[in-house]
Image (cartoon, rainbow, N blue to C red; front, side):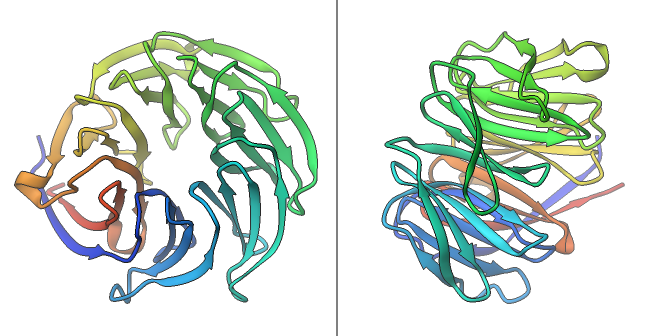
Length: 301
């Protein structure tokens, strides 16, 4: 096992409620949002203070960024989607989608995909016109992820669905989890998919062998909220309701390191979202404890 050194560099404070989501803007800037409705921009080069971009009236679970046009999209629970101009620091447009929670927003092939609590995925134009909608489940859509033309949707009916991003047809139904699938992420190469969720297990699916289940790993004590890969595909990170962050080998799926409050001054509550930023190869995490942590992870490689 390679020696791994971990150091917490910064703690960002300012939110007044749980922080549910993070969105990278570039190598060094990212956005946070959560229960207080504040959409805040942070810069890893100047970590002293965040900048509030807009204040949304209720909680935000989902953000996505259109890097081509420079607009941020925020999903406000029970209200809809807001299109935000980051330079002008104001809302440009919004759409009400009904009394639903929005658990994920992703840009897919130039359109905005929104996962709703009624089991629907809505496809919208960048001007927030609804282009299509498909009901995939009778429970919440928790996550959407695409890479190399493959797209997966994690659902609260315990199933992950592999979907054709052009037709929106279901190609594969992945069963095996005992509870909600909160996260579904492809390896950067696309060679396999990891799903995780409320049953605290990681499932590894081989995309090159018709999504056969290769591994089932008891990853955490409680719900796994998020999974992310390092850009080079060598490692992945999980964040959990058990307050811990775990670093894994992405080739053999062995656990390499545990970051927690006792040993590393980690989070004091559920870890909700993760970002692995290119700037100095830093990990960013957020939590129900209203804080954002920035971690330096060094590998003896």
